[in-house]
Image (cartoon, rainbow over all chains, first blue to last red; front, side, top):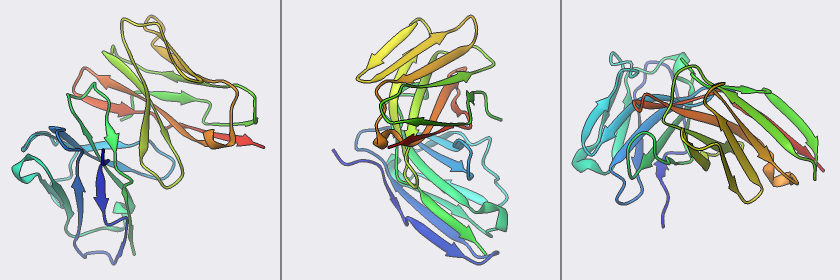
Length: 114
Length: 110
């Protein structure tokens, strides 16, 4: 069974530039999560999708961050414009059930904003 | 805000020894999960323990949960070099979202 796929694995951009991350969850998983992980910290939820609906985006900085999950499968997370403080690892995860069930994580995208 | 707090923040032991990590949380939970993260990788699920369970085993892993003390422990027996990683507890705060602690960085010395 293929795991959660994320691309790119690494991204270096200059501040004020846009950037996008892509995630393909495990087949059949209806719940998809985007997390932000700063160095030495645990992941923090940015947004959770149930199928194509964003059911929890309370932690997503909506002035510069946006996300979509078309057709309830793949998802894209975008930052525009990027700021220095956005440098972090962006993790995508999926689960078959809801929040309390096992989540399967992708390898993450490491973003460096210069 | 992070609900779970792991203790210690860092742990270094010799190969073959047992490693114990603790997690405390603040509000009632439905489930508590432990995850492992190797350097530069995503998180890997280890064990899920439900609020009505007190202990769970998986191979060399043993997890306990004390809901009265709002705490959990993860024991890794007979540690190996490959166990070197960061370990995170995560609680499903009111079934709204999974909240991770800051993690324990475990180093197994050969």
